[in-house]
Length: 190
Image (cartoon, rainbow, N blue to C red):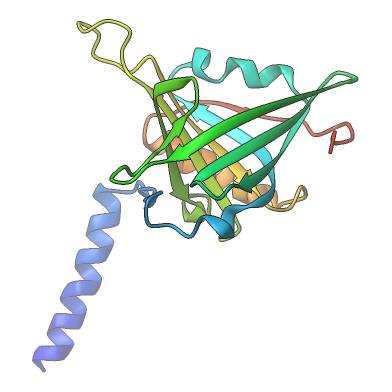
């Protein structure tokens, strides 16, 4: 009898909780403890979100973006981006360092930027990853970060549109209502 009552109570509590707290929180992947080999290989950029349009405006110039992630022996990841802008292909490399005692990656040349990884379940996608870039306020008196954006990456270039929709909906629930989706109308540069 007590078990049945407890079961009903937990069910009721869950329903009430989701009414008052409908947002799904992302799950951070701690870089120092994640198996980095599972994230190596090819990734396709699908969408970006932020609270401010300025944080994601640069993505609007691209038709599509694909990346390859490679690891080195010294806990360094090299990300090579292949970006389609009009009829042109742009290639760019970023080098990230994984340092002991830190939960984020350090971008070479921008050590002040925090680079965080989040589980793809926030987009209801097991084969996705969400990458966050955060830069501190420009002035000590500023209360808001000077950059804070989340980017959705998928393993397959043709992913169900519901994945992006879920990502955007969960982001909007956290007041990240500015978004950009790439059109993917032209061939990828890879």
